[in-house]
Structures are given as structure tokens and as C-alpha cells.
Amino acid sequence: MIVTTTPTVEGKSIKEYRGVVFGEVITGVNFVKDFAAGLTNFFGGRSNSYEGELIEARQTALRELENRAMKVGANAVVGVDIDYEVLGQGNMLMVTASGTAVVCE
Image (cartoon, rainbow, N blue to C red; front, side, top):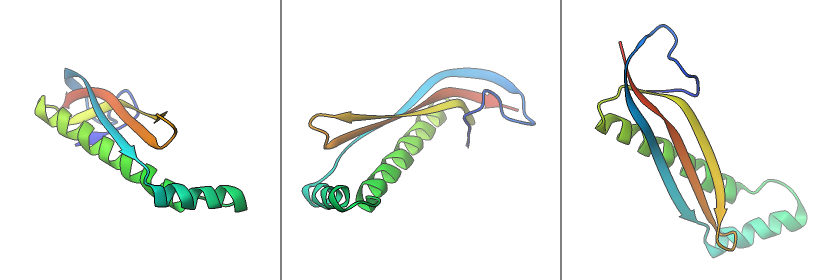
């Protein structure tokens, strides 16, 4: 499965459009990670616990996007966009990946 942010796949032509597909993930940040991030915020530096959570959520959303594209018979997803949103009191993260499922030659 080819997944790209560009509107086309270089060296291939799009034969068929199968529609817009999404991959959504909503994840919670637990108390321990929240506490560790608070210490990082106080003392400075990068929050490895939050960064790890963000990376995992993004990868899961992209896998979900690919699975939904395969279900509609696509072999590529073009024009992929990834959005992040904080939900609730700031301890929930929503990651959405969207794009157009296509069949390339």
C-alpha cells in the first residue's frame, strides 16, 4: 500500500478513485505520563512520554487508514493529511488521518 501526501503517485497513473478514507484514534494519557510531562514542563526539556504517545497514535491512525483503503479495493492513498486535536481536559488526544483511496496501475 502506497500512502502519500502528494495528489499523485510518481511513475504511476491513477485508474480509479474509491473515495475518501479515514483513520481515527482517540487515546488517553494516563496519570503517570501526565505527571512526568508536568515535571518536564516545570524543569524544561522534551516530554518523551507524550512524544511516544503521539507517535504511537499517529502510526495507529495511518494503519487504520490503510486498512480502510484496502477494504474498498484501493492499492494507494493520496493526498494524506494528519490532524491532531486535544479533547476534554487536555488528557485525551485525537489523531485523524484522511486521504483519497485510489487504484494505481
